[in-house]
Amino acid sequence: MMVKWSSSGLVSSISWWKFLWWLNVPSKVKLFIWRACHNWIPSLVNLAKRGVGGDVLCPVCYRQAETSLHALWTCTALKKLRSMCPFMQAIMFHDGLPFGDFIRACVDHLSSYELDLLYVVL
Image (cartoon, rainbow, N blue to C red):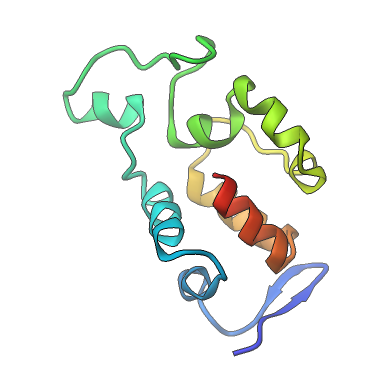
């Protein structure tokens, strides 16, 4: 199936989750994105919710709690990585919102090629 893009985002009758599986990235990347969207990666916040560990402060930047979104996108330590890809600089998203919302916002604003690149970098 051909996926069409417009300025308003993905134009198709397929669901977002089906779109994720059609991306041109390795299956392990798709699975990782899917797990992150469902909050099933072992961030410090997720581990603390399950009674493992206690401190949720990011061990890299020591500024915010390590949520999935923080660990994969908003941590200040990732600023240099984001600056290497021009399209990544345009993606603004606030920590505290679900990672799945971040990914869906990217789907609405990036080309298919940029999404493939973003997902592999994450």
